[in-house]
Image 1: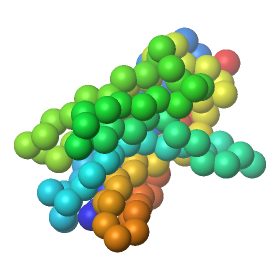
Image 2: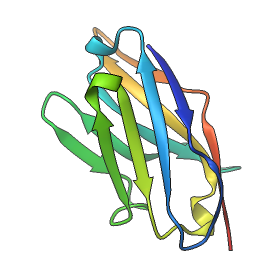
Image 3: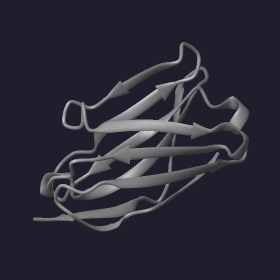
Image 4: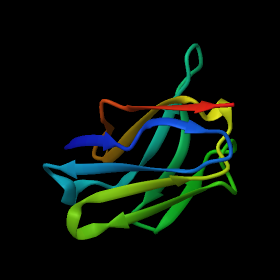
Length: 118
């Protein structure tokens, strides 16, 4: 599975953004797909994760109420919508895909930088 993110950049506080993740290769075997982010000096944290088997969507605590995920299934694309941006949303945002095999296999995109200016 290959993942490529796009849509990052510089955004003003209070604004909104949409990130795009395109998946290719073995996409029919993906069990969950979503987004994580990592700010400098901090661990990677969950932003949003959609589990296909039960259609469940989980959001990280830091983005709840400001975040939504949408999908374009024929295009194997997932979008992350984030509004009311804050400087603390500044991070590299990574697309993540999961296969639950005998072990859990994670796939990651290269990431896209989002910088929120105050």
